[in-house]
Image (cartoon, rainbow, N blue to C red; front, top):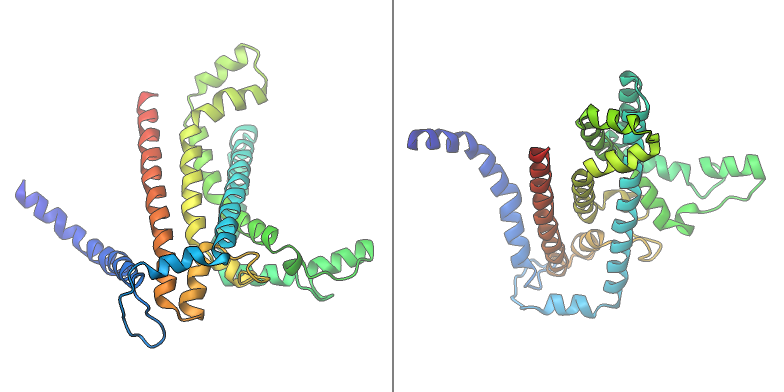
Length: 294
């Protein structure tokens, strides 16, 4: 037994070293930095909870927190509903597997497109000049004057851009879950005269409820920590109208060079992410238990 354990640890050691160096050590350093006034001079002076007190006294903190909650909440609702709709359509209503796989492949395109390329495409589509694609379409159809869409509607823009990159994963998970539902449940419902929509709401959705909760938590985890799309399209602007928590930490640390203050903002995010990870683990365990019972 001891030899087998030694072999297992030997195989795991590169992964453990990788995780320790790239994840655990930076997290520890970030927590330590949060209690200092580290800035561009790179002088470490312990300041206790000064950064956290400053954070909660900052009037912008409430705006950024509200933006984050709205961004995460609205995006999760849109992503989950679209994922469910697409998964049901391509898996249950479309019986041709090749057609369903084609649609899922198309959904993967925004997800696998590099963030820079994807954001540049959005900037081109919504460009404020007359050469912007949306402005050209509006001018051609309605004779409308050019609009600065990103400045006028920064929040809807970043939400739509984020939703399109997030749909593929949930759709694939939900599709696999629907395929795993025993066929006799559908046959029994049809024998009883149930309509197709009744089957969706009474059989499909209850059977994949744990998958839905998992995807919602997983998307929340990703949305809380991902700010690249917002950074590239709006940079949190105009002002701080589209600034979210993770982007605020980036701006404070790498733009304003207030590394200690940026680390304090990140620590709050780390705590929230840890809570979400525990919820994801719990949802996964319940999903496995539900599958075992079925």
